[in-house]
Image (cartoon, rainbow, N blue to C red; front, side):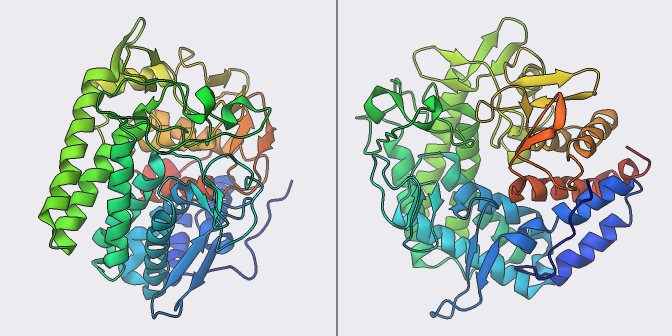
Length: 447
């Protein structure tokens, strides 16, 4: 199958991204890998960005779709533009585009801090009949703890990369207050909080048990997340990777508030919640596995129950160093990584004959592996041989399209889900750019 070319009329073009694309592509010897990089790295800009330099108030506005789903996910959109942040000082148009997304995230969170996905204004959604507090501006209203964390991560990364404080107005601060209130409510210390979700569906993980409230949890300081980054319902309410991400995001938020607003009490509240959640992770989410010893569980409930697995989406247990929660040499993380990348993880699949292996997800069923999980394995590794093996598997998984997909059959990569999944494409681009800067020798040779 011949790979498609980049679109003749991209949605957004950045001179700095094009320059970096050419610079890094020249370092890649393997023709197929180079083709994948040249299509994947700019894919978010080429196909998913709707940017308005002036929304009528003199400020930029940016709406970023996921690809084949024409809605903005807080998580996906933040992650899709993340690899471009190092170039913001080289390209004013790129900086304004990302600033518009930071502002759009604040508007979304003010609209509903529990929602995961949004329409571009009032519109239709296939999920409009969900039994929750839906409204026309929402595409979906699944409470996923990582969603506001990604918005904070992007804002913090934007500020550090650009030095620009323009997006951080009173509305942005109000959105962050709404986020803090939501995180506290979902600690469920006094009651279950206001969030409830039911969907009429034959797909079990697309709705919540216990009449829409989710399974019971004992309040121990952790934050409940009713759905995972895959948009699947949690089994146990305290999703550990997302709680780890919340610790990082809350500390980033405190730093932003300290630097940009005269509100030391709000910054202190953010740090206090981060410390409380961090302590609760250490007390309740590090558990003993019969093979791997002390590991981070994937989900817990505060009653002593724990789920041992990992998921190919991000945040995952595998991604904890990438997100900044632990270092890659942390002993609990190392043991957790060994579990996640073994058949002790029920969602790890392999085919020895094809030389393919990786973490999948209940979202796509067995035996589908997520390229994002392979990318994350490489981004959190310090082993050249392991990283090279990840590159080989990624090269072998594209089914001749030159693009990443949501998942592929570990026994037949020609069978895949989501032909247009911009986050996976851009994350692959991030990996290649990272290797070009840190391990350029791995881009030499054939895979």
